[in-house]
Length: 317
Ligand code: CUA
Image (cartoon, rainbow, N blue to C red; front, side, top):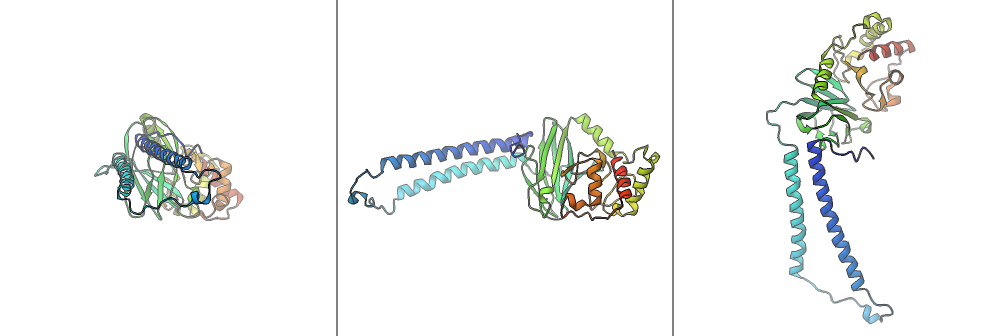
């Protein structure tokens, strides 16, 4: 529930929230008026106790009251036009056309994870969207397969991600913080297992984060550690690299999440488990035991292989 009622943390979410509050207030007033009128009618026109059957006959039936009909058509039409005006104005204010603007980041939906690309720096990551605070940012939205929907309730309205269509959202988040996101369009077996973590950082921290992500993934000491070295060999020879990329290595696959700085991520499997060596080992042994229907196959790895791969991936800070 905390997720559903996350308070707005961006200019755009605040505008949507304000529209929702005013609409709710208006609807509450209408409901109160209707219930009040109904209640008064119940009291005023109630048949008296012990009244004879003659007195309980139907009241006079009136057909065709033009004046009434005009009134009860006009009043809802005015109320709906009023709501439509503010809704359309809100849509234009919150998500104006992007024109030729260049997105700070592009998020692409996949079954069932999020690809996150920073076009200017070439950084690619997955399932965690990091943004600078206090700036009006253009977020590009795409889909690699079916229709997904980008939904970060505290930051922006929902926006569908449609294959072959470029869409966008504007996000201006004044304060640093961590916000929840998820897919809001049914997209297959693991639609519910498609969580996005959004972290808003002060500009300086954001720049430092981006710079770190730009560096090759292999830690300087990696070669010193035999297990990590064996794990990196396995990653290439077991064809993990056909689907996953790791910068600075020969792994360039783009069908599955980029793992360049995998160990710096908070969660595994698009938000389903905390990212720690135990969960990673369980994932490598049988991905579908954690995420039924996941596209990553079970490679039936030997225990030693699981350990070596876990050591390698856990070293990719
Ligand atoms: Cu992606 Cu639902």
